[in-house]
Each structure stands twice: as C-alpha cells, then as structure tokens.
Amino acid sequence: MIEPVRILLVDDHTIVRQGLARLLEEQPDFKVVGEATNGHNAVAQALALSPDIIIMDIAMPRMNGIEAAKRIRKQLPKTKILILSMYSHEHYIHDLMETGINGYLLKDASGRDIIKAIRAAMNNETYLSPTISKLLVETHHLPNDRKGRSIAERFSQLTNREREVFQLIGEGHSTREIADILCVSISTVKSHRGNIMEKLNIDTPVKLIHFAIQLGLVDPSL
View 1 (tube, one colour):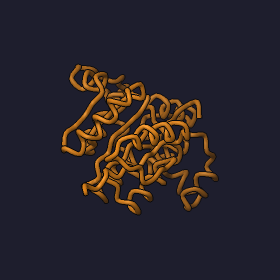
View 2 (cartoon, rainbow, N blue to C red):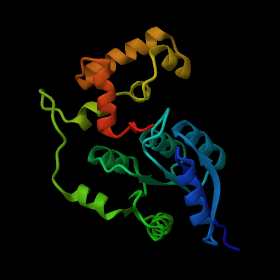
View 3 (cartoon, one colour):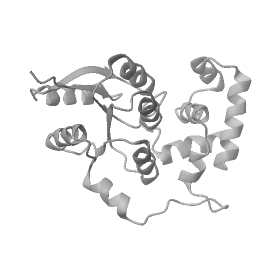
C-alpha cells in the first residue's frame, strides 16, 4: 500500500486551514497531519512531524513564512514547501526561491491548482502561479533609497534575530513586549532596533511599521 502524502498546513486564519484541509482530505493519497498558526509553531510542528509537504502563508504573527521556510529548509531539507499567499511582492519571491521552496501560489488559486502544485512538488518540480511566473521574468526594480539600494538589498542585511525583532515592531509590539516574547533584555531589543533602523535607513519607529507593511511581512488588517 502506498503511503499518503503527509501535509502540514500553516496559516493564521482558521477558515483557510479548514478549507484547505477539507479540499486535501478529499484526495485519497493526501493526509493532513498537522496545523500551525504562525512561523514559530510551523517550525516546531515541522520538526515534530517531519511532513512530506508544508503549505504555508507569508504574513503571520510572531514569525513570517519567509523566516519559517528558511529555518525548516535547514532542518528538514527533504520536506517540500509550498507558499500560498495573497501577496506577490517580487523581493521575497526571489528570496523564497533562493531558499528552495517548491511552489508559490496566490490565494486566488483554484483547488485544482493547489493539488497540482502538491503533486508537482512530490515529483521534485516547481509550481508557480501565472502571476508569480510573470513577476520572475519581468524586469522590475523596487524603489531605491538615496544611496541607491533597493528595499530588498536593505532588508537582506538584517540578521535572523533582527528580522524577528523587525516583524514584532511592525506588528505594533512595545519594546517591553518584544523583550518578553524573545526572552531578552529591553536594552538588547533597543540595540537590535537601532541596528535595524540604521541598516534600513529609517529614522523613526513609525516608519519601521510602514516599511514592514510595504514589504508585505505584516498584514495591516491583523
């Protein structure tokens, strides 16, 4: 008997996870083995379950899908990762492709497309939504700062911890809350914030939040 494809669903919206689970469980060779609501949970669940495929959103609280994908890829190189997002920002499409994801679909994709993407990934192929494919082949540059660096170049300078702090700032957490969440001192958070602002060429904390929304790492509706 052929073992079913074991799937982990990662999205902070319950209705999305439930809809995907119903869709996938209709396939006799698919089995949803777990669900996670943010990047931290996704990494923990992935390590605990070792799924064949992870279907993951990008904009989630605490840790976004980009950072989660990078961490999972390092720990579980054989696990396939499909991104299912409402965002199509070019800079992190390239970032995720370099990470080694196996597909990128927008949330307007049909159920048939999602199933095709899973089967493609299991055959070591990459599946991209038409919009994503178009963005990858078009010559398109993000706005540059006064030093001529693009948003993507500035963001790529951040360390993993700085990106984590940056996301929490973008979500509106206070310095003390971030320190409690990450189990570090307030002075450490302030130091990270200063480094982030310098690397991103941003002069106020408010602009950090706008920058996070512009990158698509934080959903302003959350």
